[in-house]
Every structure is written in structure tokens, then in C-alpha cells.
Image (tube, rainbow, N blue to C red):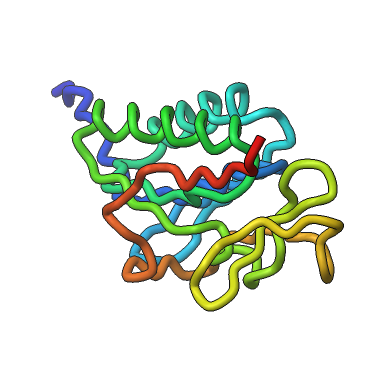
Length: 161
């Protein structure tokens, strides 16, 4: 007797995208634990479609989380548009958190010699060089959902022209 090919059951997962600067980091989480990571040096517009395609066929996504800024304006914009589109297509939620959550609250490079800093819960731009070491972003080993908001709009902080 021949058995029909049954559809493959994919593991349920959540995705975290840190696309505010290079390299782009993407983590796949199952039951809140990091099980797979991607690190891409290409621009978000090239790297994210490849990663999303790979993830889509390996996992049953239940939510996407992302670093909504501050950082590179274009990287944030592309990351948001792609993540939001993916969420709409899959009918899953999108959550956001500021990028300082993923770099130990260190300054984030902005334009020229300026950087974004977070002090007392407020994000501002400081000019004249960034204090301390540059921001190194890391995927957390555990996805702490309560640190994210359903307010997922990008966090654009642009200097005055």
C-alpha cells in the first residue's frame, strides 16, 4: 500500500531582526530560545529577502520582532517595510523595541561625527564623536517578549537640517 505524501509539519518559531546597521542579524526562536542565527554583511534590501525565504520554508512563523531604531535610516525603513509586509501576508503580529536593547545601551553611530544615545529613557543625538566603544549588536539567547511593544512603527531620529 502506498502512503500519500503528507505535508511536512514545521516547528513554530518567532523571528527577531536587528537591521539598524551592518551586519544584519536575524534570530529564530523556539519557545523563547535562540535556535538559529543569520549574520549578513549585505544591505538589508538584499539580505532580508534571502533570510525570510529560508526561514519561511523551515519554520511556521508566529510573530516577528525587530529593532525599530535608531540607526541607519534606510536600513530601518527597509527592515520595517519587509517585516510588516511579511506579517500582513502571514497574518502574524509585528513587535518593536529600540535598538539599545541589543547593544548594552551603548551609543549608536549616526551621521558624520554624531551618535544616538539613550539617557533616562530619552534618545537624543550627540555631536562631536561618540563616547565609549561603538555599538556592537547581539541577538539575545532568550527572547523576552515583554520588552517589545505592539507599537512597531520605525523610530526615526533625524538631525535638524
